[in-house]
Amino acid sequence: MRAAKNSTNAPIPVLNSDIDYGKANRKIPIWATRPLQNNHKIIKAFFQIKEEQGHVKYDALINRCSNAKTYPDTFIVDLEVILPK
Image 1 (tube, one colour):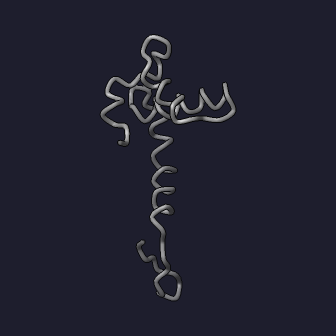
Image 2: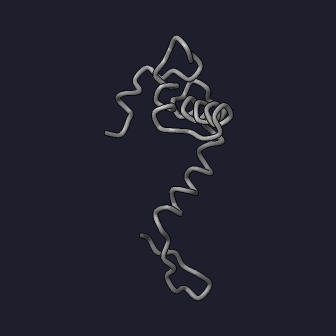
C-alpha cells in the first residue's frame, strides 16, 4: 500500500488494486490497437468466449489461445511460458 496526499496533505492509503486498475485503464486501449501483441490476443479471446458462452472459464481461455488450427487469430506461440504456475 502506498500513501497519496489529499488537500490537507494528510496521507491517504492507496491500495495496490487501485494502482493496478489505473494501469489497466491506461494500457488496455493501447493493447487494443496492437493485434500482434499477446495481451491483445488474450483480451480478444476473452471477449469472444464471453460473447459465445456468457462467461469465461480459465480453461476455455487457455484453449482459445493455445489452439493455432481452430483459433489462429488468438493463438499465442509461447503461451506456456507466460502462464502463471
